[in-house]
Image (cartoon, rainbow, N blue to C red; front, side, top):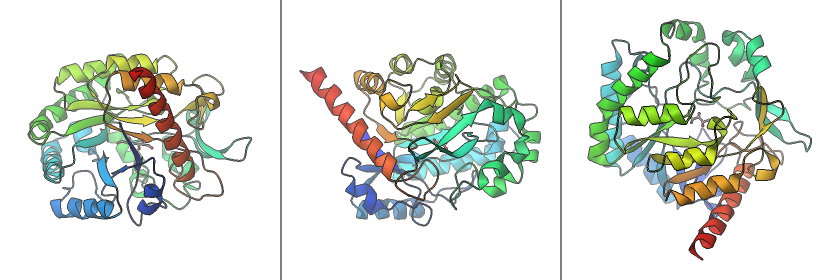
Length: 357
Ligand code: DNO
C-alpha cells in the first residue's frame, strides 16, 4: 500500500506540500487540476506542471481525485459523446504523464452529502455529520445555503456555489433518470474509456455514493456489494475498479466492510479509510477519529482485509476532525488526517509483520 494524503493544489488547499512531506508517514499525494470543469480537457503541460510541483517537494502523485464526469455523461444526453472524447483525451494525457489511477463518481446532482460540516463533539473538535431528519426537512435548493457558512472560506469540490445556484435545473436534468438508466449510462461511459485505460494502464476507481442510499429522490447506484459486482461484471476489465471508501459504504450498516473488500479483490484501486460514529442507527451519524474505539468500524479488520487481498494501491486517511484551532476545508485539515495516517500506517505495519511471522 502507499500512504497518501489528498492535496487540492496551491491556492486551493490550506495545507502545503511541505507540511505533508514532514508527516513522514505520507509519501504521495492524491491531487487534481482544481479549476477544470467536467467536459474540459486536462492538457499535458498542465498535468506535467502539477507533477513537477509535487515532485519538487519530495512527494509523488499517486493518483487523481477526481476527473469529474459531466452531467451529460451521467444523464446520457446527446452531448455526452463530446464530453467522453474530452475525458479520453484527459486520460491519455494523464497516462503520458505516467499517472495510473483516476478516481471519479457517478452521483447525480450532489457529490457526497452531509447536513452539518461542523458538529461540535464533547472534546471541542468539530466533525461532519448527517441526519436523515435534516435532509427530510429541507428543500434541495436550500441545502447549499444551509451548510455554506461552515465551509471556512474554502470551495468544496462538488459544492461549488455556481453549481449549487443551478440545483433546480440539475434536478430537472435528472428527472427521468432512475437507477437502471444510470447503470446504462455508466456502462456506456466505461466501455468508451476502457481502450485508453488499457493502452496507458490506468485504473479507474469509482467513488461510492455517500450516503449509500437515495437522497432527495435521486438514484444512487454505487452503494453495496451487489451493485458494485454488477458494475464490474457489466464491463469486465481490471481497469474498471473502485475506490473503497469505508466512510461511504459504511453509512449503510448492512454493508460488511471487510467482507466487501475480500469480495472485490483485484478491483480495488484506491482506499479511503475513515470511521463513523452512529448516534441513532443510519439516521444520525458523525465522522469520528480514525481510531476504531472512537467510532463504529473495526479499522484493524479493514486494514487486515486490504492486506490479505494484496492491496498495493494508494490509501488516504479520509476526512479528519477539525482540531487544535485549525481553519481548513471541512474534513481536510492537516492535523487529524496526519494522526489518521500515522494510525493507519501503524495498523498496516502490525498486520504485515504478524502475517509474515
Ligand atoms: C469527499 C470525497 C468526494 C470524492 C468524490 C470522488 O470528501 O471523498 O468528494 O472525492 O466523490 O469523485
